[in-house]
Image (cartoon, rainbow, N blue to C red):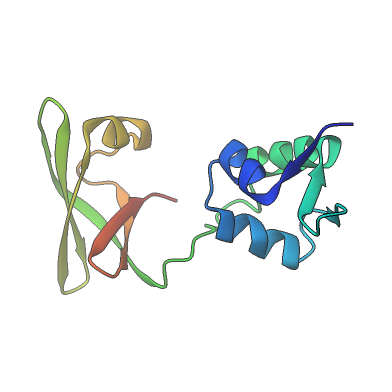
Amino acid sequence: MQAYTIGQAARLLGVSPDTARRWADAGRVVTHRDEGGRRLIDGKDLAAFSVELAQGGEEGVSYTSVRNAFPGIVTAIKLGDVAAQVEIQAGPHRLVSLLTREAVEELSLEVGMEATARVKSTNVHIDRP
């Protein structure tokens, strides 16, 4: 049976190796060690876990490492050919995020809809419920 290293699994799942390690440490995905001491994930276990991730968790629950969340309303969207600017009014706070036009379209963002700005370090991430 095919087995994957943490790094390979992370690449296939679209996350960082650190995230994959944390999931393994938390028991979300089963690992075993090879003779060289590397942690491996059996292909069938990784396939089942990837399907579980794709289906998402509980509805309305967002899984993120970003701690500073500002729920608000989209007040402006400026679309360019490639980039976009999204403004959110979250209570007294006006937050502006620069992201790709594709991201705005994938999120189906529109002025007047509810969205959450998540701030981590110097980055502002936008998601919607």
